[in-house]
Picture 1 (cartoon, one colour):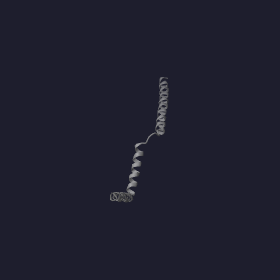
Picture 2 (spheres, one colour; picture 1 turned 90 degrees about the vertical axis):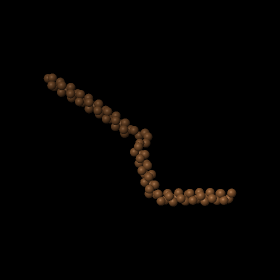
Picture 3 (cartoon, rainbow, N blue to C red; picture 1 turned 180 degrees about the vertical axis):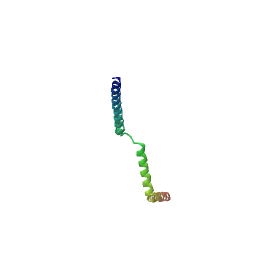
Picture 4 (cartoon, rainbow, N blue to C red; picture 1 turned 45 degrees about the horizontal axis):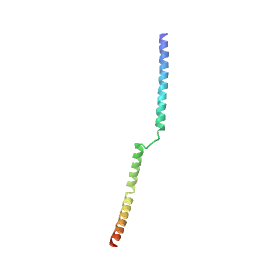
Length: 84
């Protein structure tokens, strides 16, 4: 009789624990899945990696473009100074 009561009490306690753990897990899942605010570290790292990869792929083009732009600036500056 006493053994039966203890088993029933343990069963009820086990069910309550499982229910509480289920509620906690559900809240955790909802908080994690619903957290869409702000940018995380992973997103920033991925954006930086893509930008670095593009810079490496197009480094010759970017270098040539920068050289042309600075040469034009130098030519315009020389023309402006010579016309004074």
